[in-house]
Length: 351
Image (tube, rainbow, N blue to C red):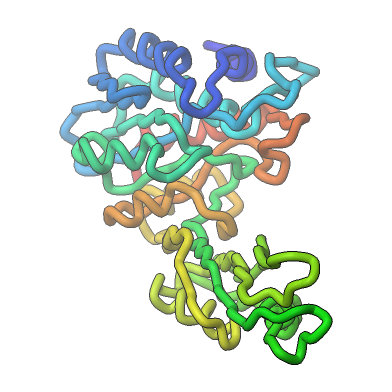
């Protein structure tokens, strides 16, 4: 059997920064094509491999091939049972578990689709999973999906939504020697920022998982010259919201927190995904392996599956809190746990 830490190190040693995933996609395609039980499809730098046994259920197991830009951490380094290197945590440890599962399980009790896709770490319009849903939705269809984002081998259910807006506050120009003749648009932010600083987000329990909402001001633009009262300022604010809010409710809630703005522009909005832990395949995966279950506080591509009616959860190796850092790493035990849990689910099926 392939040593999973060595396999993960091999994947780390294939550079795959966003928009440069071709070499890693080639590796996945060539390995998967050695498995006669899988029908392999290549769409750009996205690789999809599907079993076609005609079973009642189909699980989609997905992971992104790309990493963030290197930070003097190219190349794999193994120390004991720990692998260091660019993408080791996010998410080549998880990819190793998924690829090894695909190559090992040839007679499954449920059908499976493996989706290895490009450009998760960059703009949404470039996302490979989005492209597959747009161009070939039949390739990524399934009853339930597992996304290999780093979760320390726990189930992180659903995900929170993220909404970013630009709130525009206007004033009136004047000379700073006679400010009473104008209205300072920047000063209008004083009470707004104070309110945001004291904001206490909800912590709702959804399907047994506690989510934590938060609002943060992330950018401010304003000012004309050193002797001019500014007549406009733009405040960019990000809301992370729980999946029990609809996108419309989230926009309304954020607008209420921003006071008497003059104009509000939605800069980016990715909706949340419900946990959907009641699916029998997810229940089986959790109970058989005694997995910890918690909420996913960030946004992930599980929302893309949920948008298409496919319940999804995050399940991968690595600690998300160290993802994208120079010293990111992944532990052997977590890769092996994810791998064994996936193999068991596919070979035994649902309870």
